[in-house]
Image (tube, rainbow, N blue to C red; front, top):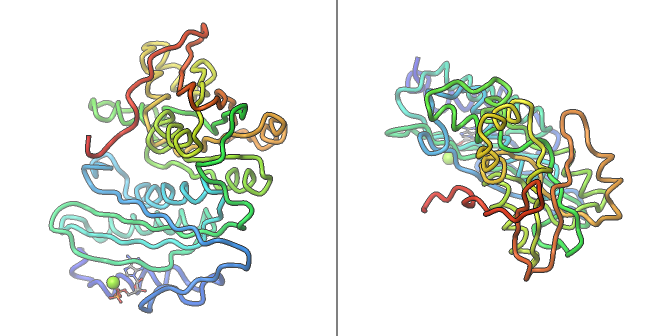
Length: 327
Ligand code: ADP
Ligand code: MG
């Protein structure tokens, strides 16, 4: 069965029934706008990301449920990077004729499962036919107490640089897939179904522990570059300190050039933040078995620029910065 057999309105009605009532919303799916509430003293955060078939994903490599989850997670990751709590998601889809209704339902189920995981509600969207390829645009809203907002600006010389989780897994998976191979399951999961670090982002914001923060979507060095530009500072990163997964570590032993994937690969969706040295113990106490925290370098004055040191403390050339769609 295809969407045209069901019809746009029956499809939306099906989603509306699956979502149910949401206490945070005065109005959800079904009117011209959703109407949400922002608690007093809080800011409304809003972010949007496009996922375009054959630009951001290949349908042949993607399970539609995981793709639905990922569409939500990459947006929620931006809310987490501001110290916020995700509240409402909006899903706009352009649906090609060759997508079955079963696939579409799997995708929607993935979107709703991820919303539930993050405690957010699907509050609206738009549904259109696409002449070619699947188009997904998700918008996420969140809230944060005004005093707990963390931006890219605010890092100071002397701050320690921390990153959550492990780096490079997603880029390694993409490299294997592009070469026609099959990445190890743990590495593939990081590419297809990344998890936004909401609890960590909120704890850092609420604890006043981060001077500046960003989520690593374009690659560690590219996203660190955004913090350095916004904060008008420099930084040093020690590549030997990067936290790597067992699967990534095993691949690195065979090919040491893979360290560039951890430094610049992208789509890690980990949090990178600058924190004063006196907060180090409090930061360390936020680490969990699933989401470790690693101190990978420190903030320096702006004129020091961005330097990457190898295990012997020698400066190594910075790999190409992150993905640029128009380069
Ligand atoms: P309008 O023409 O006023 O934009 P639509 O018919 O496009 O209204 O949408 C009707 C309702 O369904 C709106 O509340 C809209 O947000 C919601 N909606 C449409 N498509 C989706 C979707 N794919 N996921 C969630 N909500 C959707
Ligand atoms: Mg509409």
